[in-house]
Image 1 (cartoon, rainbow, N blue to C red):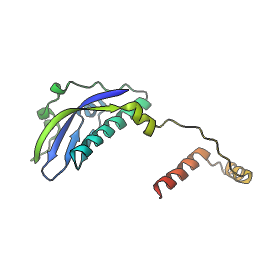
Image 2 (tube, helix red, strand yellow):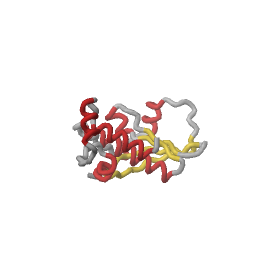
Image 3 (cartoon, rainbow, N blue to C red):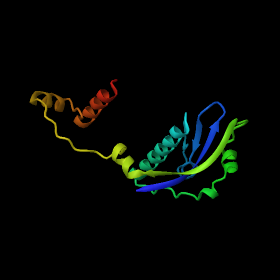
Image 4 (cartoon, rainbow, N blue to C red):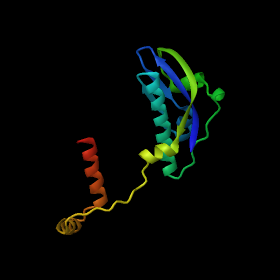
Length: 149
């Protein structure tokens, strides 16, 4: 499933870009903001932001917010809501960002996957007697291996 949302980009005087997704901010009553050091990075971050927020909504069984037409998104209205004094940016523009939610969900979704594992019987017996959650323990161990914590 692909979605398209209008996104506001501000090129900052100190470098990089600030990025805002007004439709998601309003509809989800959350901060839908990200940034990037380069325009390419800022656009990728916008895709990740949109996909992450929408995937959470879908996994909670909620409807995803409807996207506005880009011409109905106003910089002035948005900036008034931000209420930032003396915002020093070089330029600003708005564009649509397209996101493939299905692809994002395959990679980052919270859907559980069943795995079969083999462990020694004595470990199984001891772990069960201690009421250890096997799934949670395996998940924690895998995260430690993945992120080398």
